[in-house]
Length: 358
Image (cartoon, rainbow, N blue to C red; front, side):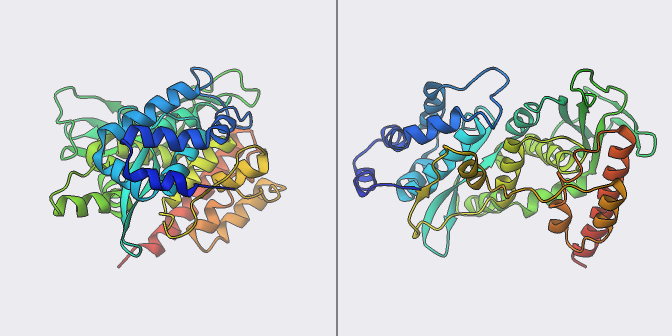
């Protein structure tokens, strides 16, 4: 674990945002390089990310977002942690890429603005498609005036896009995510049996309104400030991300360590109190990387499909059910995957109904 030296903290009063951001990244340069080169997490599909391109995205983001720059000066520890996570995920930062966001948030308890990392829609797509068995990932929105039908039993879906439809948040009806995976050998895509998840407008809006970043943006608007969070800046992309997260969390899509850890961090989206010593993990070993990404050691896989289904039916909380994901990845036959996905969705629906407010 590495602390930010007092000398760097003191420089906040006399540095330009881009210079200070570069100084922080350079201070942890070896950690960042280790993360960018870490072979347990797949490289971007376009090839390995360089320190130069990563640094350029960081400097561009702080130079175009005044509130982000102020939060960086106020809480360099939270900034450094967020940057480290971006490096571990091997994603460029900033709204111009829609891969990885640095979100300023006010910590009311400590009276300081801090930075929370948030993965964008394209970032989630990028992470998902790095797995060798994921052939294609997509999420689409359905708007008023468009035809849409989906039969969960047969898996048949029909969406006719209307170019004249009002493609705005106000015209949103719902959406769906679709993932095409390859056969167990990782060679031929199974085009006729994609993994699909459908959500209606009310479900999507509920997710938005419960998001901390959206709530912070609403508070900023009430104060007359610009809402820089992605829910206000890119609402349609965030709805697509919501759909994508839902299908990736369904248990039927294979995930590697990078995607699992990224979703875990994205789920938490918690602010680290600036009063605590700002520390960073040293990403040099698999154990350190797993700790940095919030991934615990995986429990024993289920022995049979029936064992998995029985365990899911006995889950009493949504978190308990989600923790079972990954314990049935070794069941690769199509009928097994369908049975497991159905059991997961059925139990999650029951638990969500119980958790919903009256």
